[in-house]
Length: 431
Image (cartoon, rainbow, N blue to C red; front, side, top):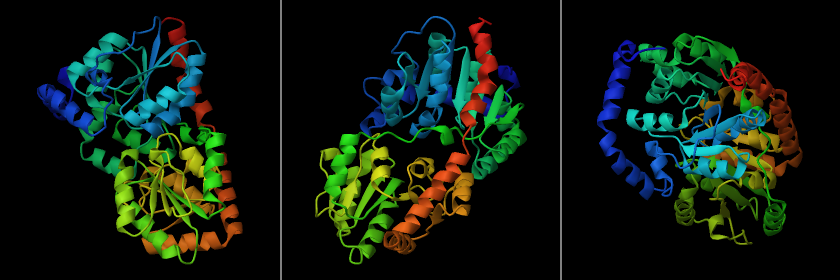
């Protein structure tokens, strides 16, 4: 365990900076509240002020940044909780908190993770006193880790991911990366490339356990809601643009406009990555000459609807089941792509843009198996959609290949649980 004086200059400077700006946290949180990025009833949790009591006995703390990471570790949390251990889950977004409220096992506690400022982190740790910390993917917050290690809390990175771009950025701060990763007791990486990158940056114990997202069940859908949507669509051709980001919706709408004469009745569903952007996308649709309907208003698509904006939380399972062809967002803009595993499990043919570094290996496997294909512009998206809409057999073949590919890549949950079970045994023995 590193003492304060042994930390590199960069981490000491970060600690000093985050300490000095702590008085500004209130203003920052107010701004986030105005923009819908915080829960007004729970904003004190971001200062490390708890809204729940700590349960007696050993406590496993799991942290996941947002919705995707929370979903990936839900089954792991369920297994730990089933062993009779108390579990605390923290996350950083309102959407992740709402998901946790619906999906966590009874008895598992959720809190918002505190801002990475020493005072708030100490508040949090003083109250919760976790005995083991499981950090999902790449949430390497310096104060959180260093404060935790000073209290001898073992940190395990689960489903660890480090994209080539992130690796290159971390290499510029090699001593900082080494100081942080050397405090991680065990690093469980998604694949051998991630494992190699973590090792090169200073992680001491690294295992390749696979990607937990391959073991996540498909997102649920209420049968009544699905039936209502299918009746409203009236056997129209349907395509879905899932988890889109700003700049992509215009390209999707343009592709729709290119197709609508050749594909009468085409219904394009847009499910933005950030649902609060629904009204913005509706305005954009109207400006481009397409008729939108917004789901959060309680409306279903009617005969005149061209763009159906699915700006609700937790309903992607509905639309994956409704649309046989899915464009995965975050990939036509330089975001790094969104997770294609869910639509693959639900028998979708998948299209994506070129910017997919967040899930590069998954997309590479899907592309090789011809379960997914790359588009680069609104024109190429419209041409690919036209090809698929004209050939239902091709859609079925792509969907079958995509599902077979992700099914073959499972098993990470068992391997991850086996790797952390020695820690859990120690906790149950009271050590």
